[in-house]
Length: 243
Ligand SMILES: [Fe+2]
Image 1: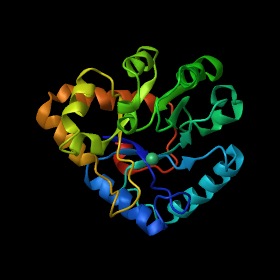
Image 2: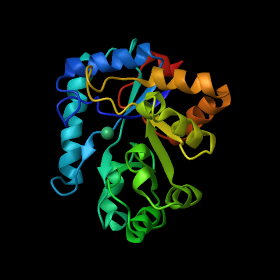
Image 3: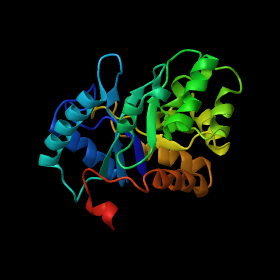
């Protein structure tokens, strides 16, 4: 499995508070069958610049490197969870925040009804910057959108990520499965932040999907994740992903 959304890097955002917690999150992910995990610390354009963010991310990676166990951890890739802002599609500097080695960027959208301008901005990212946008945890805001917005994004080539929780919670899992069947979800992430309140939970989503759908659906998700990471370079290499 590939976990496409996580806050495992230490001391950079509201995720792992120490390198030890990061290591525990990685070990837990590995035990759940995660072979690759993308570290996506929050990037807030109002209070940060890509340069400052990258310097902080580099430091966090160094701290994790010191205690990283390549035998019992997934391979780690670096990216960012970029908070949407007007002008994103014209900001060349933002290309630095794609998953390292790729032209894919995870974007956290506003938790409100998106205007036509907002939708247009998302669609312009690929045209202007040659970056494929990935909308993060779609379940947070899909119920706020006009009918047809999601279909419009998907038909235009935008990738959609949902959190593992969406597939596990009793009140949402039927909708999650339906969206997966309709190919409106392309990538899954744990969005894990710690080992307590928001712990790694990819196995639960896998179980929920496998018990309701034929294995082909999970395979499709894995296939898309692999394609996204095709040219990516792991920042920390593990034994399991090298096999
Ligand atoms: Fe997140």
